[in-house]
Amino acid sequence: MYKGYEVSVCAVIVTFHPAKEILNNVAAILDQVDEVVIVDNGSGIKERALLSQLARHNKVSIEFLQENFGIAAALNIGIKQAKARGHQWAITFDQDSQATVGMIAAMFQAYETYPDKEKVASLSPRYKSWSDETTIVPYEVSLLADVESSKYAEAEEVITSGNLIKLSILDSVGYFCETLFIDYVDIEYCLRCVTQGYKILEVKDALLIHEIGFPTRHKFLWKRPATSNHSALRRYYMARNAVYVYKKYLFKKPSWVIGNARALAKTLAVIFFFEDGRSEKLRAFLLGILDGLLNRMGKCHRTI
Image (cartoon, rainbow, N blue to C red; front, top):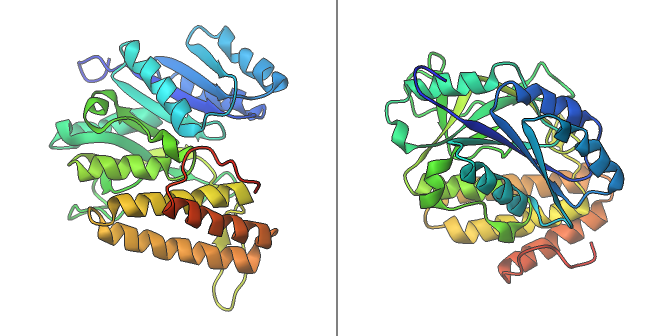
């Protein structure tokens, strides 16, 4: 019960060879939701045994997939289960993210203050880094006049982890794009919502502990550029799926496409100067661009 009306929330967590930290991460969200659905993307015997410990809790159910079908497909499986079981909201998580106390309550408090609730597609937290919990990122530049006094900001894109999705809008905007497999899955979904007139709210007081990749910082002249150190395969997906999204939204969101392409070019430079395995990653990046241009989507079947 929230402010006089029923709100049923299901957490959907996608796992792929999870570490033991998954136990703490699930425990952190249990008291904030009505149900937890874990969709495992083809993990091994040891990881399945680890996850089975969670199934002892009456709030937790697990769907074991026989192979890795990608994060988009796994999310869709979990969200469809949440919808079929009568939940009004689903909050999606990566396996290595941990909700802070009161995170979801803060989201609903922000939702209550929004003047046009019917247009809200989802709400998202800011996040703290596991490696540097003093840094909180990001808080989008709001269209509102006074960002600091507001409980939220309107965003064009947010990450999958911690995203609280209103399930009723899926009948209009559709589910996650499974042809992307992984990377840009969250971005494409957000852009689809925004271009159809829906709002994504980033909530100021909702915090998630989360890490993107394996970040390191480097010294270059007077700057300290950061790099995520993703694998060559992830660099392939990032490049390929970026091209796919650019083609789809070039005329709908041209300013976003230009800004993201610039950021992707900077990422390429950072890989070249600072990351290990740069030749493999640069090759994968270029192959990804090629396959994106040629619409070779789905799971990567190249040798990366």
